[in-house]
Length: 268
Ligand code: ADP
Ligand code: MG
Image 1 (cartoon, rainbow, N blue to C red):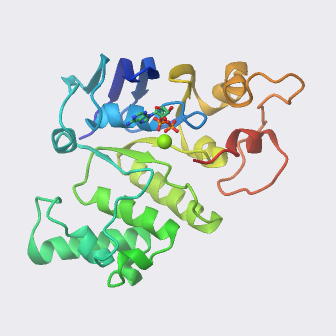
Image 2 (cartoon, helix red, strand yellow):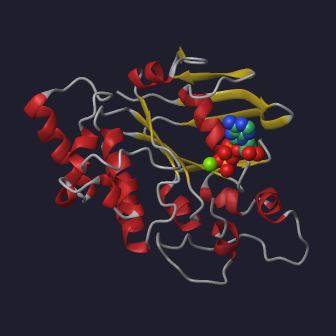
């Protein structure tokens, strides 16, 4: 069972800084929705607002018909919304398998839990590292461990904060393929990612944030063609090529000098 996740009119300030202003976003059930925007535009804050890690000043969050505004992280998780973190939250001095078995993951125990954990590690491609200390994993492998971990409880909706950030191109393709496969199995995804090829080839819908405000929302093609999106990334500098491409490039395409790089170039 999966459900549409909606944020409506969400606002959040940190002291004098308005991190989110009246933001609305829909992650349609069974779809992959992308959330993009420059560094500091509020993407992670919106994830935190949705998943209960940050109290919001105004607005509502719904999972299907259920209002989940202000629910604690464990409760949001219990409702079926899992998430990963931009900076991975793994235990470096536990093994990869032990990370999968930490007590925070309830519902399965003992041998079944271990088997399930190993199946997930096989699925994400890091089962051969099961007994390695998590701290010895490469950055990309840590991202895969986080993805494995969030799948343990089989959440209907998964929020991924920069799943490809800092990951080498071959692993990026691997991560994209796993997300696509999970989505074909019915999982709903909402993902933040700076890698524009990744976003545009994977997502059904894309929402663009700039300075805490939603400036565009639509299909990848619509968003690419939206002048406000270029404004958000380049501050409306005159003389730049518009961010229009006839075909979305393949995930992991590392070609340089295209408008996609302009949109995909910032990391953080
Ligand atoms: P993004 O994920 O799009 O890069 P963030 O959501 O992390 O952006 O941050 C949005 C803005 O809110 C930034 O200006 C950031 O410095 C600020 N911010 C985020 N979290 C906090 C916090 N806990 N306290 C103060 N300011 C914060
Ligand atoms: Mg962020």
